[in-house]
Image 1 (tube, rainbow, N blue to C red):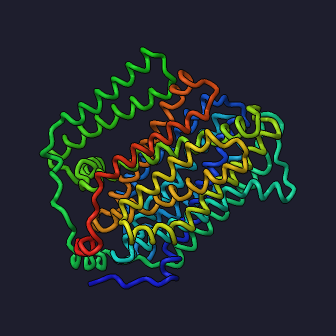
Image 2: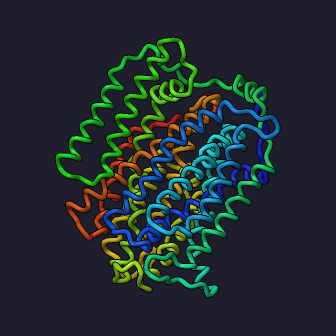
Image 3: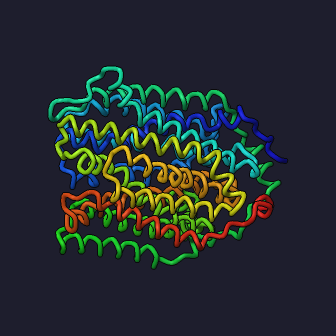
Length: 501
């Protein structure tokens, strides 16, 4: 039994909710450093405040993936309840965020906002696999990427549009400008309505239908090693690595955020030991054992792509944290977050982010499919990574703010490739019954590098380049060179073999 082929309307409805989700992410990415600095935070402490975003993704995505694989609420479906719940919470967070009275409150709201966005976003990746035949996975993720780019354009331009309408773009010290406040409010409404559209216009396949589809398609690949047969050495090694990080932080007096990295390593090591112990007692169906077992048993192709994702998202998170202070300091000549020049820089960064997202939306539907047909998906992604490295390196050469448009064009091609190509490569290699958890685990390698940047980059910059945020772009470019090297080990099967499982 084969899934019916989706037409344009079906592809649109399946992914339209991502348009709203990405509005929320764009508002967060382009404005949170601005909000923190407007409330009086120092630039060196920005990575520590951003730590909430990757930490929530790290915890939420595997749990939501695991739960959504096992959810069926009749006509409400499998993935859609998570879309809607996350959208409601994210919309509330967007309304409250610009009313933050202090830095600690803004950091807490960032935590809530990012967790809510992840609750909505993670099932959308699996939703494409649920709803589409394998020969439509590439176009499905391309359409999803186009909506991501379009939503990010809208979210990034909101503050500038508010200023053009006469809304005040400057606020007294310690307050958030009205342009940002209204942008977050309108963004919350748009996010909720877009996700609601997908919830209302799509009907998910029942468990019986999914079982029929699965039986018609080989699940590809050998079964992973049972968790109960694994030893405790891996968990002990993770815990030991965490203790080493704690020692290094104390010995070299690194920023306190590094303690969180060590604590997470210790936590994962202990969780692995507990999961194996439960599995050995015969309780291998609990959430902890299932997630740890699936993480340890990832398909080889997924593991290779995970390394590429690690370096790619390290570069992206560096950009999101540092672009506003870089542009303000080196292109608008100010480090004063209360000045009109700084707020102008913040609006220009929003426009630059809109440009790279707009380029991504176009590239996802035109350049990438054309290139993939000629050189293959893996080489296409290598081209995208190279464009990103060139875009980040160009920040050292370009000093006119308008010239940064060139940088954003290259970054937009890179962004489109990151959002589309790894998922297209994976689409036909993952077993349908575990699509949610595997997509959630794959996204761990999206959030772990962000967490690493948030905890370590501040210490590196404080020690080597104090007050010079532009050097973070050199780290971003180098990370993408490492991603290209890792991509040479990814050898996806030809399309015909992929359709056969």
